[in-house]
Image (cartoon, rainbow, N blue to C red; front, side, top):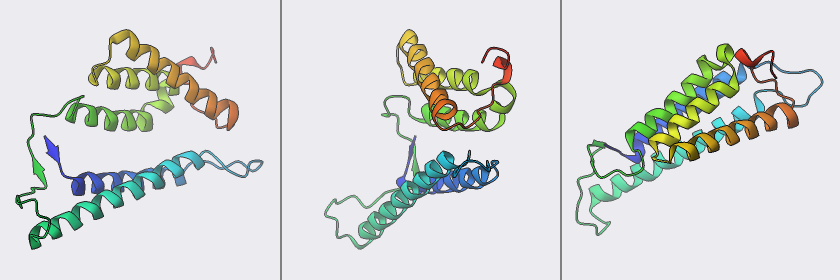
Length: 167
């Protein structure tokens, strides 16, 4: 499956807007100049910017193809097409990333950040065809580094969930 840059850009634009809206609902702390919404807002802004750039670039390319001044000869560029030649996960990896985002939104407050992050990243890395022990090791290391960055450095309380008595 091949999704054009315009559709993918629109998707990331909407996802960034949703993330920005969700981040605006995070609590603020009176003693800190920035709160829990700081990093998600930066990520959301990056999603919005990258999505807009993809969208504009694809629309400009389509306009140029319609005029016939690109010199590529093939002016058929559908917005959505099936492509069986995708490598490294393709659509399942895209769905895994989306599933990870949704899992962090809905499951992290219940189960906790670390379990959701480790399981989600492990699944994503397995879809990307990493060896299982490498996928698990990278998922654990990445999740622990993220935990340390947010909780240790930024003093942003992440949900502990089922690990409440351990952490």
